[in-house]
Each structure stands twice: as structure tokens, then as C-alpha cells.
Length: 303
Image (cartoon, rainbow, N blue to C red; front, side, top):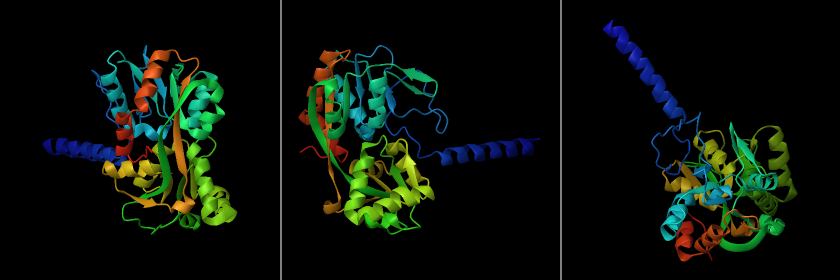
């Protein structure tokens, strides 16, 4: 009987260890807020792009998703400067998805329906300019560039954008339909190899499934690299920088300046902001030296 019991315990421990191994790189990569019950289950219940207090917030911020690594320090720093705002809700989904949420008034994730109107929306300069009629104040606060993320030791020996056109290279590519970075990367492909390279990666390799188009690239691209599903992912420099910072087994491959781009991040206060004073205070903080130091820490540029 004892032998059978210990055998069953060993089998259970093996399966638990395997389940943990299968998801050991899964987000959230941020620090979850304190709560009486923590019930994040990797691979099953995990909502890494919604933050804070969804009920009766005093400030709602929609961040372009690739800034998720800055959220913890930004929000805690803002609360310290403004203790009058302790209930803050933030989202870090792709900017195109957030734009649709603003336009339509709601977003459903799983069984959760969110109808909060944002006070502040952040995105690339082009999208903010396109949506200018929504805002009564805008601010520039950070910059970024492109890089390549590959597995540790770079087993496919990828050196440059042109290598992504090779038949045996699996690419994790942000979908330009809703990812602002996708359009920037497409422009970089054309700089590196003209229409031929762009067509190979975005048409031929999409059809044969060696280019994977993401839905949430700042989550999927790192996971595709970490779990061996892709050989390379063009990402924002800050994203590859962050994955290395937290000890994940990836490498950052720079992209040549003549093939790269410089993205400008802007924030806008919505004309219909439910909390206009809090929104103004947050924009002031976002453009402060303290906030700039946070962005620099995570690989962004601020001047």
C-alpha cells in the first residue's frame, strides 16, 4: 500500500512539475497587485494586460502595449506624487485594439466586458495624429527603435533583417492590421531588401506558416522565442532589452541604423475624459524627469 501511495505521489509530482515547465516563462512579468486571493494560473487564467482597480477607478490609462514593463514603476511613482489617486486602471493592449475600444466603447476579454472610457491614451505619433479630434492635449514623452529577438546563443546565426527571408527561418511578426510596430517593420524590410524581401516575409512565408502574425506581439513574440516556436522576432528594442533584463534566455540583435526607424510615443488626454484633472496630472508626470528615468531604465530613449 505504501509503495502504491508513494508511486501515485511521484506521478502527481511529475505531472505538476511538467505543467510548471510547460508554462515557466508565461506572464504576467509584472508584479501583481496585493490581494487577499491570488489566483493566476499559467496557461488557464492569466490576464497580464489589465492592471489595477477595475471598479470605480480615479484614473483610466490605455497604454500602447509594449510599455507594459514600465507600468509598475510609473503607477507607483504617480501615486506617490499624487496620493489623492489610489484607484487606477490601466490596459496595455495593442494600440489598434485600444483605438477600436475607444471608438466602440467596450472590450470583451474572455467573459469580462470592460466599458471604461480612458482618460489618457498613449500610442505612436502617427496614430495619435490620426485620432487628433479625440484629444484636447497631447504630449511626446519617449522614443524607441527596432531590434531582433532570438533564442539564447542565436542558434540560426541571424545577423540582419535580410536573414528573415531565408526558408528555414521561422518569424514571429506583429500583424500590421492592429500593431503599429508592424507597419514600421514592413518599412524596415523594404529598406533592407526592397519589395522582394517584404513580399517573401509578409506573403510567401505567411502562406507556408513560417511567418506567424501575432495578435499581441509584446506577449506572443517573446513566448514564441522562449518556447522554441520561432527563430526570430522583430520587436521594439525595449522588449528584447527587457526580456534579457529579467533573465530570460534570449539575445538582442541590433538592426543597422540605415534600416531602422525611430518611433515617437505620444499621450493624449481624451476630450471626454471622465477624470480630466487626474488625466492632466498624469500627463504632467509622464513628461517629468522621474518618468523619463523609468523609461530609460527599460531601454527606451527620452531625447
